[in-house]
Image 1: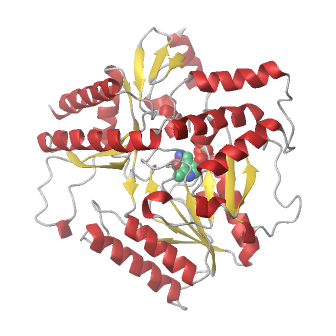
Image 2: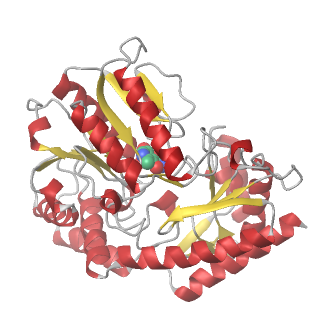
Image 3: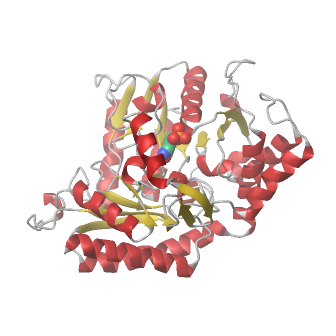
Length: 436
Ligand code: PMP
């Protein structure tokens, strides 16, 4: 079955198919961190639905929540009508949000994907401000529909001005650290205040507290506060895209909590649906200028996703899984930094909580003399080789980054210490095999 399925799918599916290309497996069963293929092989899944599975595959509380809805005879499709299932989800969601945000927040159900919530956020701030321009950052990823794509790396910019996202390792200003982040902030200020720069009047700024697809780049807390200050003083709504960073992933329930900022808008998806499709935009009530019907969509009321999401949010909150992600993530980062000391092909190890990136570089290139020289060139072929070697060893990892040179780990927050050790051992073996 395994070979036949792979052959038929690769013959009929779009050339754009992504994960299936690098990961030629046929999952038939899964539980927690583990996936089992049609060929009987087992894998540790650190892709986790691209960061969606906060509780891993088929967590009992998620399955039970879904079964309960099915057994209750509740309707599965109700457009955006009020239901007990939706009420429970909204209540639990608001319980987890930063209180100073939740106190004045409204939620718009979008759906079914993260990119839909991004579109809704753009549309909302455009309606609220009467302006059209959008500010986004180099290396950003917000989705694949027209507006979200405009704000993402590699897009043809139309109404979006791109600003430098701070990064230590490939700092565009050649200094990294706090100084690099401060220079990035000043760049943003100068662009906004230059009336001749051609930047359209911004309706909003969208940022990821940690860039995921862009290569696992955590924004410094101080830079986040600067962005809050810069946007607030110019009456520009700040949109935090927490599609990937939310629900405990980075060591706080929501990643904006690290810097303590209160955004005007939050875009949420992935883990909030407990493995099923669900996306919402949450925003301060005074931005709620929409008329009834101003934002619509048939699939905004997925009852199973809301039930699975409620169970997931509650489980993460009640079991302190955000703190757990923070401590385990710090430990894994420390172990990976030791690995980097051993292998010159690892240029950088970075992350926050259980959102971890290992950047592969060309070990043959001359070592940089100073930070201003920049790091060694990115090595996408080495990263792809590490991914292949990981798969051979029963470990599924994701690739990302501006040069596709970053191996990414997004394990479920429920991963045990022993499983984390197994993941690190397999990754170390894979790097060793590639470096030989
Ligand atoms: N924003 C961020 C930060 C993301 O990581 C993603 C997906 N990787 C999206 C938006 C888009 O979500 P979706 O793929 O569900 O449209």
